[in-house]
Image 1 (cartoon, rainbow, N blue to C red):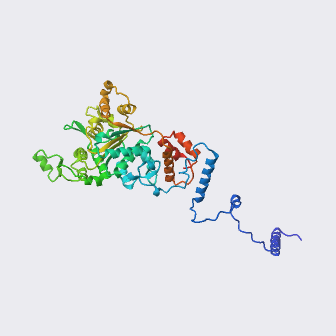
Image 2 (tube, rainbow, N blue to C red):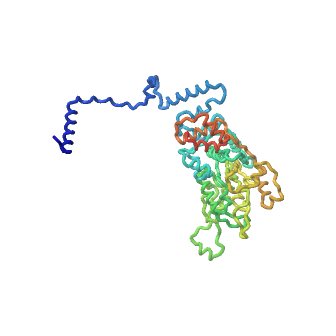
Length: 468
């Protein structure tokens, strides 16, 4: 009998159903164990004895085995120089803070966190652009203690009881040798010791014509009132508690009196004269506001008080200081460029550099930067130990700048990292990233050789590698 297509389809389904029901049910398959063959063939783990192992114990054990194998396989060579960085990622909170008691030879190569008070002061001062980029995306601003750090802090300890005229220092080193970081370490150390710190991340804003300038017939220089106010606010924010403890040694009066009755009537009810009594806190002196024109006078008064007091040491630290010893971008009414020593704020700072003004206790610390757009021939000659060519330099003020730097002492900053310092930088970068991967000796040496031991280049090499 011939079936239609629909009948055939029904018949086939019925046959399949009957056949399936007649068969015994299929046994259940055991659940699959998702374990790789390598793990399944591995010997059973050892039972822990004593204290429970930490999550990183297995990795630590394997690292120790690798280290032992490496040391036994080669009797010569450097061995495993990275025992410190092949451990699990360090806990940043456990890093010691950068305090004076931690700045010693035994701590060289160890990572230290900047204290919160220091970080707040750095925010008030602002930082060099290169350092800002480094600290912009890290959880905690940190630094590695170097041998040069210990040496410089010992110099500051000696300067804490002597005039700053005897401690005028210029950090000298190749680009990327760590001068800016060393300057920040010195500022942090001084703040922790209770010093007053006047820190400038760059001298460029002092001479680049970014703020107004007004000629003063009294001093025969150009006042910079807006710049003076900005610097006062930053210094006050970073040193408020210490400045409050210091008292003025005389009375100060700021502002101008009305010259005639008409001006008196126009200015009636407006306070033109501000008097700061003797014995007032220096924080009160720094916040004196008798009009924009008086800001430069207030700034000078604060420096005068800091120079004469003998209670607290003062550190004047200037990074990228070359623009102070070069022709500025300001111009006079005849459009002639103005030398920096004819501007009131740079002139005051230059007086502390050449020793004509000084703090009763403290130091002046300078650093040159290869990134500065304003270079100084006088600074280059000082760093190179060259003799100035007086006749040609006098035309551009170079002879004056050479004279200013004549008694400034050079302090060398090593161009290359020590092994323990390089290990510390690797630890710091790993801590910032929280990476658990071990950095092999080969990779470490590759980065160190590629950077020629230069701190800045070595740090950048580590940041670029995927292992970190």
